[in-house]
Length: 341
Ligand code: 5GP
Ligand code: MN
Image (cartoon, rainbow, N blue to C red):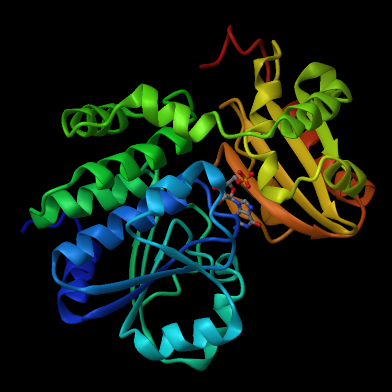
């Protein structure tokens, strides 16, 4: 086996050494989180290892079909204790920020469990004994794919589906700036392994209840433009969530929609599911880096897609971030389609 870096070599050794693995990922898991867990679990099982997957938050309906053979358990205090007692090692996927694994983080402090991280985020604590953290990779699934390939193991059909889901969702269906040559090469390999892109896209995108679209419609109808149209701000209130019977995960995809407006550089979604529990999501069209903006609130992510949690009112959250965004956007000159790439 030829590992591409010393950290990857350490990870392969880590996997060889242990027998019982607990896998987890970030709160409110997305396609990349679930996809990387499922593919990683199947890789480990193929090596004869025992595996359990335990997450802080529920699996979104759109990705549940990936977990039929590799069930994902949902956190409860006693279940988590049982898993930590049972496992020799914990592998954290698609985050390297300890707080982002949610309630499992408390248990980490109580158990001296061997810990490895496989992630592609810029903002990280690197809290594992082994840290494979490569921000240049488009998705955590890209890393898992490369690790499996390095090991020489086969990728079965369900793993290929899981890896494709992570890659395609984290790259916005191969549209975002993290879509590089490796993303397309990996997609091509996964297609050769049998992934049906049309079916997969249907399974993950045609899952919304009608209420979600009505909610999107309301939120989008009230969008506000700032900074000469370079910044779009959208907001969702607790009243809107409860009236449509939705939860936080239902905003998935919403922040991306205003990106179709001509001249937009940044979109901010300020969503308050429960009063005073505010979630900020930021997206950049590619010319400005927005991860530093949310870092001020203890958040993080990538240069062009980042988020943070904020305790307070939506107005306070906006008052904190709007001046920073204005400063950032003032540094831009020319039209998006003109001067700068
Ligand atoms: P989203 O806006 O879709 O929730 O997240 C966009 C990106 O920012 C994702 O890569 C996600 O992992 C990251 N992100 C979202 N919320 C937080 C947060 O509270 N803390 C950190 N460190 N990253 C976040
Ligand atoms: Mn990811």
